[in-house]
Image (cartoon, rainbow, N blue to C red; front, side, top):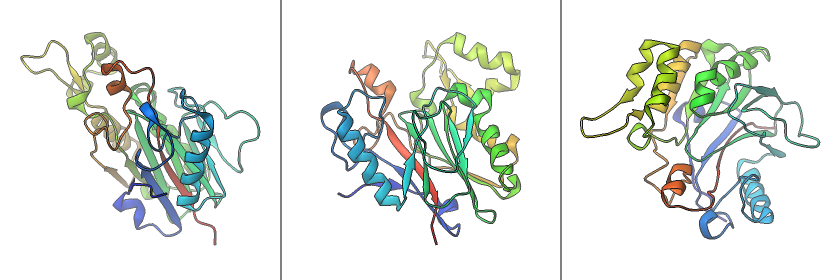
Length: 257
């Protein structure tokens, strides 16, 4: 079955590394989850999700495809093998073990893939607004350094994410960011005819990468909300009054020799 993926020009050029930002194209899920739903936490048929995840594993060439129990945190897991038992609660993973694909699930939040090609250390992180505010990107970089990476060599790519034009928020949301620093006002825009502000999550994540001091940051600049044929979107599902939504997966792996 043909799967549609997006790729990063920064990560594609690194030796020994495979990656992909998978869209919803392909897969066996039906109805509101139609396509490549890889979220075990969804209400989709569990067998369909298992099949979809195996399609991703085979597409990227991995022995194992791993995801964590994401809970909007800055927590990072260092992976040395597949998980035995329940998935750990975290929002990021790092490894230097070939053949293990690190996957993050998303449906508006920012999927981040990291790599230091020289050290052969990779990472993957799920960064919604809370994870971004609490420092999940910086925590992932620090965990990669513990495995031998250097931040001045790390490339980070942000996959399909809810863009500012689609991200209307309340004033209390903006106030929370302003309480962390007045400079965060730059990530909010409120047109004269709009009753509420709009938040720039990709821009905020980019700033976290700059603060972390990574070598390169690349944004695919794809908004999950207006492309229902390619991307799942939690916000779009709410606006359509749908009972659930699918989850896309983004994955990165060190190739086995």
